[in-house]
Image 1 (cartoon, helix red, strand yellow):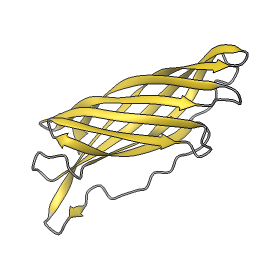
Image 2 (image 1 turned 180 degrees about the vertical axis):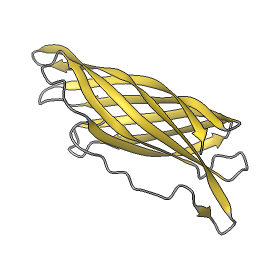
Image 3 (image 1 turned 30 degrees about the vertical axis):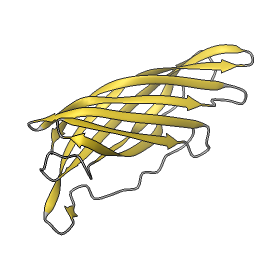
Image 4 (image 1 turned 90 degrees about the vertical axis):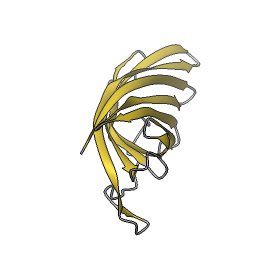
Length: 168
């Protein structure tokens, strides 16, 4: 989740042909949601924000070789502060998105992405770990955030969200 504004995600046609060999990506889609507690340290003391996150994750596995090379994960959704002892919320939802390249094999997919907010006040690192079994990918998305919620303050938090994706 990034502070202030919309992060742009470059779009891509996920069901695409590769290298002229006729290999199609297989798409899997699922949602994840939850809350993350951000601890904030400021000159006048400590406070906390509770973020709520709702995302859709789409994974495009390239080919059928069992190797994740060339596969991607795209996540789009919203976040917002739903509770605060900092006097900064709650406030409405903000759009956020990220993309990562996946590595490993179909039975051990991994990836990571780092996103910085447009104003530079927040950096979120996302990691994905999961495994394909039949028509389902089960795994988790972890997020770690470092941000400056207001001048003279630093905030940090982390959370892990379970996700199940079904073949489309």
